[in-house]
Image (tube, rainbow over all chains, first blue to last red; front, side):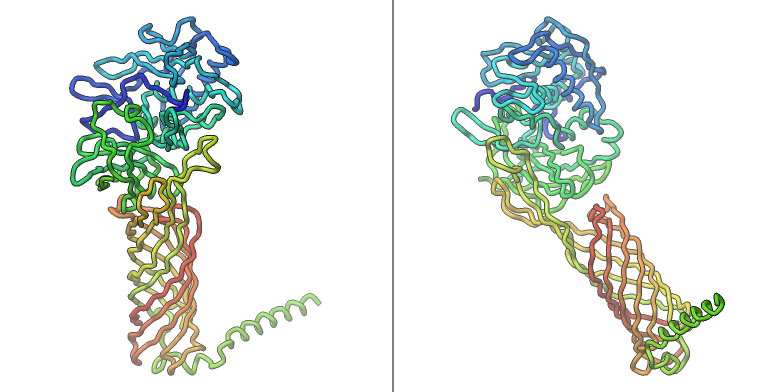
Length: 332
Length: 238
């Protein structure tokens, strides 16, 4: 893996085995025998920024980059949430101090981790009580508007980590190649893809359709409920459900890509937050990242099948859903 | 001086109208449907038959991902699509009323089930190429004005060509009828009636050919599509 190319999520990833969830992956937590979506219930989300910079980036610039990233998520028309910068703090972004803190921290032990997000959650409701994000000073950082060659863009990484803070897990909307030392991103169409773009680029500052669908699913407002729809169905292989298949919905009119996963033993999937209209649907194995970046390692994710298209055009209604899409895959 | 000029202009207009009316020189009075002087104002025509509508291109698209720096140029294409609406045959019915022997207006309904197909190809992970389809239920409700070229009739007045133009409402229901998209259309064309018998009530056949410009519907975009339409009907005049 390319040094510094991985973004590690320290929160428990969704490992929903009892019910399908919508739009790629949302973070979840077990409450008794059920899994609930991890989300904030108190707004605005009040956060502090560690009063510490790193080479070439001051703490004020950190605060500005973080605020810009929060604003990007809050600008999604189909979602409603808000945040508030409370002030600078000398505290590190660590769990358990009762405050949500974002900032630089020296973690040379995490040689592939640019940043990470951790949570304290209410174990009865799944509501987030506290979340902390650190950006690893073991890497070179930049807040330049155009990006700096050889430096990672703080705002791009903050956008990804704040996506976790808000409850999103990793998206599989991207392609990678194996190189000496690990995987490198060839292309991605989601800020929540688990591996960052190369240093020097600011491509990660803009949300994609996949991210927008996901955040709307967690914090839906009237626009989301009224104006988007969903596709649901199953992925099966020889009549048996496939767990962990990546299903992609491609809007034939707008050319937007939104993905989801089959998240139950019977292969059920739901992709929500879709613009109304006709879609091409495609399924592929989860082979562009470590499975542990998406699912709990204990799950039996099936990657032994070929990518393929669905033989019908699927039309998504406004404010409703199209169900019964069965993708029958074959083993490699 | 001014009065004289006006008179000349009126004469010019009148001459033009006479010229226009006499464009078909066989004089309508000699061949307006054998036997009786119908159709005339107030006559009705009802017709029904089959209509073929041409297909049209719905365009191409690419499923693209943002390429990382240093991995090539241009967006990464996951796969490509090429969509089209297939030609279809549907049912058409019309009810018209004659305003004069050579002018009628009519309303029509056209129902068809055209297929939409999308060719999926060039997958980056070698998913086999495939054509995905869906079937629409298309309804067009339209109105037209017909000019019957009685001066150009033939077969002792049994065959009468006409030209028409009009517009209407387009409604496309996708499969399962959960999504309905509407639009509008305009059309111009021409055709031919051929009437049998000589009675007051007559049966005939009717052939239409038109060009239709459609906007909206299952296209979902404001692009106007041009397509040919050909129809054959049984007609009843009374």
